[in-house]
Length: 564
Ligand SMILES: Cc1cc2nc3c(=O)[nH]c(=O)nc-3n(C[C@H](O)[C@H](O)[C@H](O)COP(=O)(O)OP(=O)(O)OC[C@H]3O[C@@H](n4cnc5c(N)ncnc54)[C@H](O)[C@@H]3O)c2cc1C
Ligand code: SF4
Image (tube, rainbow, N blue to C red):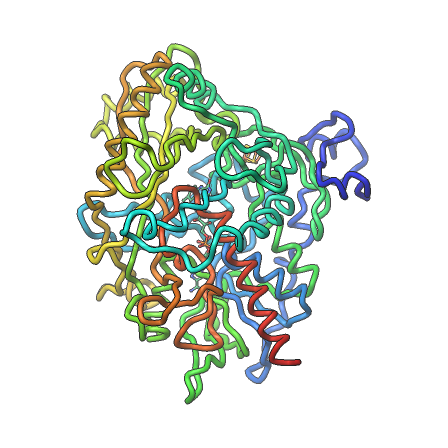
């Protein structure tokens, strides 16, 4: 049982040093290994199939950062909820290897078509699948946006303002940081003063992060250990039990085998299950059915090769920023605004690499370690918006792919460069991106294995993104030079697909309102990275989760008013 006093404080440090590896501890002591999800996941138990007549309160499609938090909230309110997830339900302890190639199954690997001058890399660069969605492989950087991020149009006359203010999101950030057990610095160096600190102390810095501290300090650029949703100490969580601390294994993007990283499968999903949510993995939704008034009545999905139907009163579409607009377009749903698939944005994410005499070992230690937000709205900027700097931890095969693309090396020259892998360190940025008419998602004529049109994503970085990248590249090169790096080079890339079903104040130019409810369809809600009106200058997952909880609360309040 948890210590009640410690729980009230929310500061959950281990009371005594102990063996952190659950398997080793289980071997040495008479205690079962404590990876929480498998004990709670009925993945190996046969699920009762729904009958055609069975109508549930809510169906949730997709169990990533957008779907899992609201699923738990709706289940806790006593609603009958069914979650349909295209991917499998993994057992981290058995399924997650310290081997990046073996872990390719965590990514959405169905072919997606990329077009434009800067075609977006998909697969491991964008989106995942499985119960937990992309959080199974995310790096777990969890910064809050700075309040001005929500007001690009107000501040620059370009881009969009959010229809939700920072003050409305703040209680959700506080709740999430506490619930997930985020490790981070208190006080946080940037942004307005906070009402609450992080529940856990920061994680130790990996090699790249330590070198970045050294270089940035010489240039007067402030850095800080980042907020990261990996546990720096054991943490007790409702619906889950004790989660073990991070062992610094460094393979967060290959899936965390001991439950230290707050992916949805070890946090919100067990909570949802505890409160009666019916989770159906390997369930790929293709059709959304409506009645004559246009209200959604149910969905059709394929599970283990069999077509199923689930009737529902409300639908929460949380399939991510590619599959959500794809499903809307396939089903000709919520299209009145003309904005489904439009406003596609991607974070400028240029990386700068350098070689050091010291051994860096980029695979080792927590990869999401260090942040600087000194570059948020830089004074000498010739672009709208801003960006942050983050240190990188990278696994060898991923890095070799980047070297091949970025330095155009292949064969022996690539092998020669890769001999230095243990001595390279990288920094990257994430920054605002402006929506542009040339950047959108559409259905292609080409069909996938299910006979459905593949999504095609058009992306061309515009002048604003190019100027931001140039500004950032100069600063990152200077940091690495000051830190003593040689052979410095830049790899231009764009990360995260954002904004393809955006929220706004009116159905004239937005798909959903500030609560995530579709303007066109009264019982449809959308919750994932597609609803962001602007990209924000930070990693998206924490804000996706905050919006997810807010959407659930607004929905539940509306249901209560209706029933009163
Ligand atoms: C390598 C990498 C590292 C990252 N690191 C970070 C980080 O450090 N911090 C951060 O904030 N963000 C990070 N991100 C981004 C972050 O993981 C995503 O932006 C976020 O998790 C997206 O959440 P989502 O709910 O919008 O979509 P997803 O997590 O993609 O969830 C959508 C879910 O819907 C399911 N689905 C799709 N279509 C269907 C269908 N038809 N039927 C049923 N189910 C369906 C999918 O299988 C998936 O599980 C990273 C991304 C990558 C690729
Ligand atoms: S480094 Fe990442 S994968 Fe390894 S234990 Fe820590 S959170 Fe989990």
